[in-house]
Image (cartoon, rainbow, N blue to C red; front, side):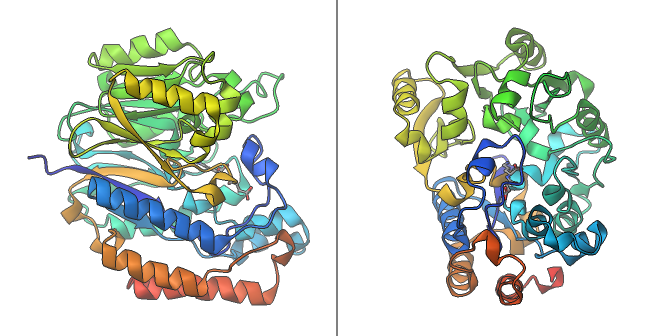
Length: 422
Ligand SMILES: NCCC[C@H](NC(=O)CCC(=O)O)C(=O)O
């Protein structure tokens, strides 16, 4: 029996969750700018997803909200920065909930020293995300402190944008076996002078992470994301593709040169199965509004894979009818499980954005970061009692809200016995 299992570490939605439209190129973030957010409902939705996955798949971890508002960021931006709504909102951002961007993870069987390697993402493209990594690293250092089994790196130099696991896929036949790691980088139309949106993942960053993790070059593939997908709003690869086991589930327009991409992956991983969704069945626009590919593709204990998709997929007739047809084909994906993460979705974060996958032996992880029913109950009580019910963008900066947000986070740290992160 394999000792290594996949643990999904979901980001708990922080008490400062708000809609500030901070992410250029993220269509949902722009669309919901200025709306009222519901942090308590958001965190409870995330917790319900975690509970469901724990019951179904057996292992679940979590990462905590980072300290907000971040006064150090406002200080760095100079006195008066708080009068600029975007800068103020950046200091309040709860964006660390999207832990797919916390780090890139290479499990032990893939690495030269046989340890599981994690490199926090520098997230330099957006100021509200670039502030995350020091606190994220502090948490990863704690959760994966056992340095016989884990190695937590520094981020790559910030000249090169790195957005973590959202642009990384691992293929394997079994978690205990060496896998093939696929890094997807972007070169935007904007860089070429004809587009609006930035490419957030640079190939130099992907290559650096692969070197830092000691990956075997014969088992590592670098693929260019389709600039057309970036321009349509796929700001990370996980908006148009997801992998699990021997399978990639992807949109036809996910990669710059699809045939070359699949050929390169097949050369390193001959057993590859591709479930490709044609643009004629689900357009890029439908894929991006429903977040069909921002799904958790998970191997079920009983065999076959489940696709955990946002509820929004059920509301899009073309997407839902594609999924029904796919299930009828008896391919690798046997089940579709819709989950309600609408509060996160409105900022462009679906079920897959909310989790960081770490393949490891769960007994080597700091147990305080692993979910149990009892811990879920304790968290739920804290969220219900302390998370603000709603936040309007105009509320940001009010001393009472500041205090409520700080107290809420601290109450959670206390109940989880993690006050050293305070
Ligand atoms: N992986 C999903 C990430 C979503 C995230 N959204 C945001 O940061 C929106 C924040 C705001 O607009 O308030 C992003 O674009 O990086």
